[in-house]
Amino acid sequence: MSIVVNIYYRGENGSARRFAEEMEQGGTAAKIRAEAGNEGYAYFLPMDDPETVLLIDRWRDQAAIDAHHASEMMETIAALREKYGLHM
Image (cartoon, rainbow, N blue to C red; front, side):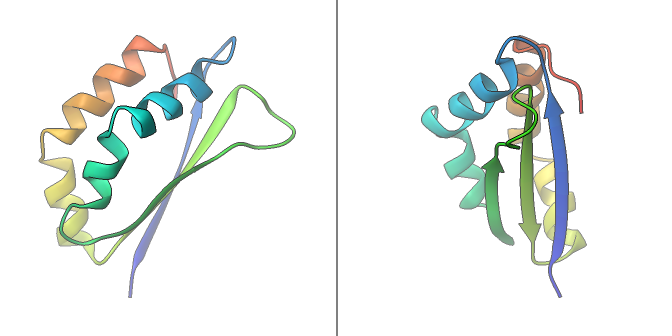
């Protein structure tokens, strides 16, 4: 059974959307999708809140999530969250 993680990123002045765009265009999202155990990684934009982006992240099991959290990807994501001043 997969584990689905929903994360809301909230920013100001379009920063959450710019964060998601950089994750996609910079290749970080593709690298996460290629990690062992990742079954889905997609950003969505709520129609009623232009300052929020929803990430739906699906993993094979807890071990795959733990490996992801221990990877260098987390440093990249944290740096981008800080760059765009996002809150989760």
